[in-house]
Length: 432
Image 1 (cartoon, rainbow, N blue to C red):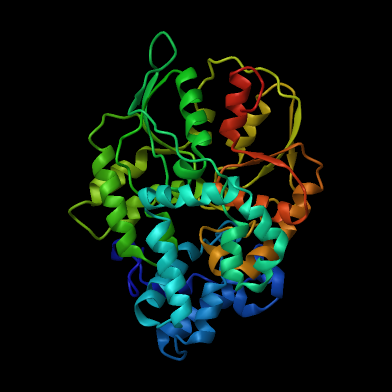
Image 2: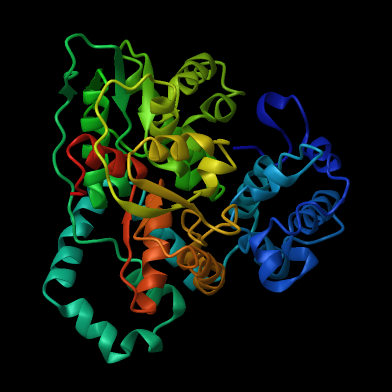
């Protein structure tokens, strides 16, 4: 998002942003990697010191320094915790952009990263990859491979690809338009279908559309959608993120819309940052800002909408997981809980230390699988402590991460997006 020297629009320099940190330490207990290792250089204020050193030339951007930046999840819990308003989110994105341009990674690391970014931000490629994956899962081969112990002999990153393999569901085709199911439409909205969401969790998009229609919304799903740029932006690939974002803006701005709806937390935080992403580009800045101003997470949008559809009871205990890019980046916490609490019979259980990351963090659990597992195990312990019947998670990466760790313990716990639970309530009280 940031060039190495400049903040969005050139308003504040990186030096200014770094100087906002007064080293008070409020970020320390909020940081998952500091909680894991107790290492100052793996805390937000420690990483800011490293940024300052690299900026001033007293530190080389070498393997040791890069390792500390790579270990950061980018979960933004420190942004929420900071009393000084330090924009660590902007700082870590700028630093990762520097790493991408100035640091030569080891060959194996560089190749693995190229593989991930050649696949995940491209829905069409993901769709093709889903076919052999579905065969691998449904044929029983995955079960045999896991039982054989072969995965323990593979490098952690390759083993993580299997552990995090999404369910065998494959994208269903969405129509470009769904009319409201009320006597007159209340709003005209468009859905950003996502990449992983649309290919591996099509049920979430389908539930989103059903609920919006029942609540009186005409729903558009613009065809030929690509990636929103979230994974690229969070990994320092700002130019790539801008290319994806510009295409998406051009596609959606053709329609007259009251809101642009997203149901994946990581994508939503990036969509809302489009104004900053293009702050230095006169050609698209205003269009990007106008797009961002219309973006609403599905929980956020529905919480502001007076409900008209009947809620039917669901008797269950639900552990609600705060996805980092929903709770910290977008500051959306009360809305999902309000929607779930509006369902008769449903008991929403607060997960202890719920503000802490699950270890997914976009591509983090692929690039740093051992750290991700350590962080995720704490989350799983806390989820299980409330004895839930169901896990609610508003981000596909979080769902995959927590489910993979539950499988290691041979624990089956149904996971669903809050919108799926609400959809079940509206349709009669049974989860699909």
